[in-house]
Image 1 (tube, rainbow over the protein chains, first blue to last red):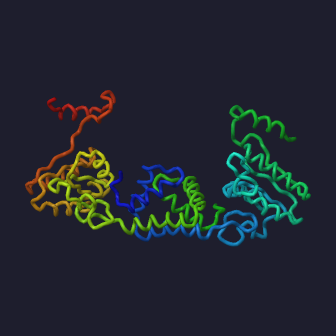
Image 2 (image 1 turned 180 degrees about the vertical axis):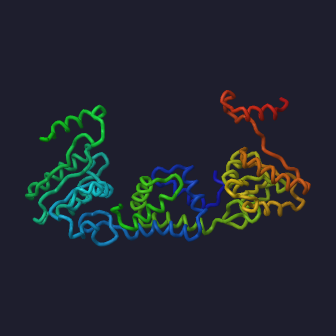
Image 3 (image 1 turned 90 degrees about the horizontal axis):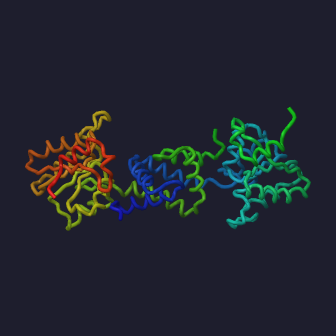
Length: 198
Length: 198
């Protein structure tokens, strides 16, 4: 039983639904929010509704954006003949951090997962196929190297290859800065298989 | 550098200020909030502004409430001749859970702490003194058993005793269900000192 006012319980109930937040953390957050000034609390609440209101998918690459096109798709400096397919907007940020890639992206917003009843129609596969207008030369599959990511990459490559586009997959191998001793068998096998001339 | 839309960064910046939330958790929370339906996101934001708008201090005991008087102060069943002084609204909830106490409370909203520049004027001490109208028979000090809680209890007892009111302190001792072996010296000393006839 709670001894707090109903609006306080309502607030903690909402905070508790956030990923990784339990009853105690939610209460701590609620007390912290109440300790804010009125304008700060308003700004906090507005940041939620505003983000929800403004953010949608880029009409080309399906990444998150608050304009019609995302910054990458609207940039004249990016190579539009290359598309890197990722499962999540977070992967775009991770790849951008490497400063290696100059092409565009396509965000699937998930991977094919029969166990979780996610099929190609739940992803942005149609939007990807619509981008194959002859100007695209290479599609790089950068889904995660797990069973579902692999299956999704395989599925898409079978759809894309008949359209005359080169389909590649990011390299497997040992992570930079890691230790051979602790690498798993599958990774070492792939690292040997993908060896290059020095 | 961020590759997300500004309104997304604004949202994660706000979430990151929540206690116990780092950059990664804030991002996870932001994605989760964006995955909500419009009405759910609105309700989430409204729970913050509503709680902030409605919740204030009870005019008598200074506990959190969204009416003029809190549920305990407005209840005819509670013994108004006893006041239990606590430092935080959470302590009221903790004591209420014990179902042992039938009096009222007084929430100080802090403890005297010279190191953190918190003096009696930053707490609800004046409001407590104003409640000493002759009907109050006992004030129970239930501040935490640490240096600051002790000092606050001592300070208040010196103010209250000249007003002819009985001032008591909650008992020290070993916690129920704990192990003597792991109790600290000070607690064991107090437990022996406070022993009772069986």
